[in-house]
Image (cartoon, rainbow, N blue to C red; front, side, top):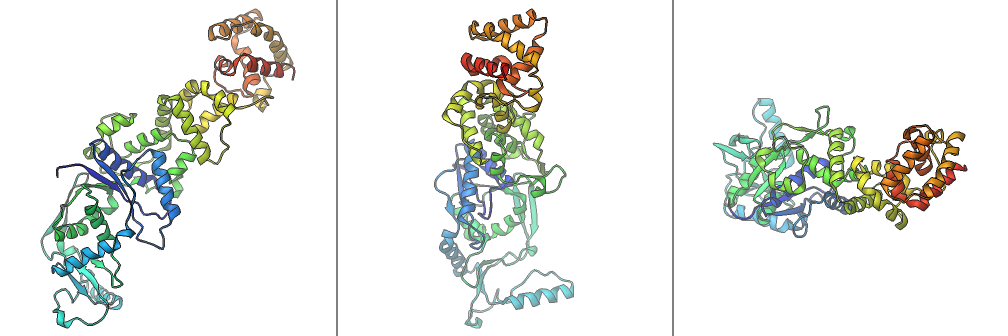
Length: 467
């Protein structure tokens, strides 16, 4: 197959963007983007009872958060129903499909008898070769004429060649007796009309490929390249479900994972490039190929996700961290930062991002920059503010008033003060942490003082000294 690569992600809008769906979308996106191709989005909304606009919006929001941009407008499968029906009628006109008048009761009776006789329950319609003059004047389904012998080989880039005996395939319904097209037909027509060259999807669709190939071949259309990827399992080896924790992409945003780390982790779920664990988007696009996808189900590991996210947090530009922090706060239903808080936080991002794996951790470490006076010490840091410690802080204040506010000068001033009082700097750091942040675990005292500036630092130390 030559020409431009076209992939697609085709979710059903019946809920959120499942983490497994997010990975499928990512694989399609990486494959297309790495080859200068197109990545399309189709909303498979033919199940009108279960499809909702809210679910569609949630899927689009999840993809947008993950940074998976698609080409063109999302396609609605339901909107193509007339085109799908037209293909079924074309196959009927060409003798590659037929009218089946069997009722649900007759099909159920056929299967019951087959079960009793110990033969295949695959329904064989008596109408397949019936002469048109014998057709009754009643509603009918249109069924495709499946090949009766031989084999169908699904040439799959992940699973290898998968062979299915044609006598295992039934004459699949294309158009129901009420005139509505079935999902299997809609998928093939849409993929053909959208020019999809590579179908990368979960291996729970593998059996569908043989049935869909009947339509491609009957219409004389090119069969796409198949790549059926294993599902994601939990750490216990069972299919990922609610008991394993969060399932929706938006839940991971609300939990505070950076999108770049999430992309990296999802790419490594079932695909590998040598021993590379942490990589950039540019590297992922350049490296991603179907040959690197394994056949075994991948296991979702929250610890590994955190570690990869921590490394990506450190690699992010400061402005990008601030921008994504705002998205996290909104997704988690937390108050947005004020302009004053953003301004105070900006100079701290460069060191805060180096030790945070998630945005909640970053916010926790940024407490000193986001809090406003008077600083309320927590229970642990309050213990560091003994009478003796407060006296130390009172003695320290004049020394700091004369220090030039650079790291070297602050280190010299505080180190000299501790030495002159016959103590190590560690003894002084506890009360300073309590005064500046109200916490016992904080970034470096010097980092905090430089971010807060002379006036705010001295005001906080004064507050604690006279508390």
